[in-house]
Length: 411
Image 1 (cartoon, rainbow, N blue to C red):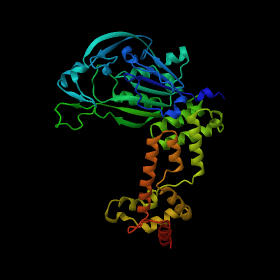
Image 2 (cartoon, rainbow, N blue to C red; image 1 turned 45 degrees about the vertical axis):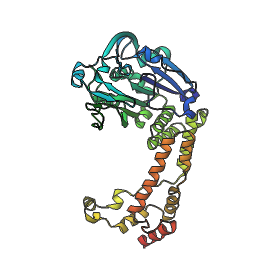
Image 3 (cartoon, one colour; image 1 turned 135 degrees about the horizontal axis):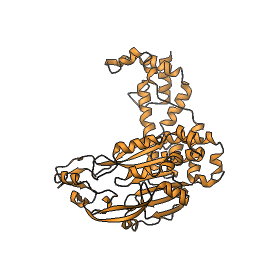
Image 4 (cartoon, one colour; image 1 turned 90 degrees about the vertical axis):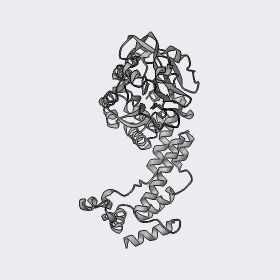
């Protein structure tokens, strides 16, 4: 096994200066080869090489659905430059409108074209064939040309890409731009499923002055897609390394559950995978996460069928009293869950300090994910104890109180 199969190849197209929608924590950057593209040569001049990455390539070339040449339409506001012209109907409809940013208002007329520049273009698949450039993560901020870029990355999307990020547009601002439906259709055809949609804050159109604005009209966001684990296992030539990369992509986007599932699948595909690639920080992280997971007793909230053992009882959900017998629900739950282990796990989960998993995530500077895990375990624990009627309403709930209430329920 060659360890270079575990190198991460992250391609980001557009974005006027290389700002990534998926930042890489510093402890993991030495595992990542970063490739930056932009059709606007002036924007590439703004990109600096960050020596913290394994390698960084600033590719001043347009990416499209063919090799050859394409025009880039440079706009007065340079970040709006695109391979497609601004739609005149949009200019007319939003005439006098503003896009509110974090520093100033941007007039609709600021999106007007100031010049057109022919630039060479290529495809992601052509770069793979001619230069051997692999693509694991593909990020698109291409101002409308996402459809063409994906069509030119057909082979990569079918064999190596595990994570896809794309700007998605909900308003027609350019003639011929990729629609949201086209983007979702192409992702689905290649075996991806959407995991997140993050709307662009502050990019909504406004027509009125300050003091008369709210959130405006929806314009765009970033969609995050994961390659389906079953597709990856059956169709990719190197499922072990690809699953490990998918696990990292999931962690970076805050999807711990899917990331752990992908990491466990990577170990199943190749039990020695994490040992063979121990030079990579993200592989060490995945190894530690899976070890923690395998050591821990699985612990779940009660299921619907434990609350409502019959369809008739479930149909009464929402009525006064919910048609629920808490004592019977508790008996059904503890017929599957050992009460002693339950009390032990509740004590561990209620700890206000960081859990071993949360500490591990913080060590790799996945701080937002660590906070999310902590908030979720504390909130879920309250839900669990409340629905099983094990909370002490008068004073802080203790292990002794929980044990007493469980004994009463099971008596």
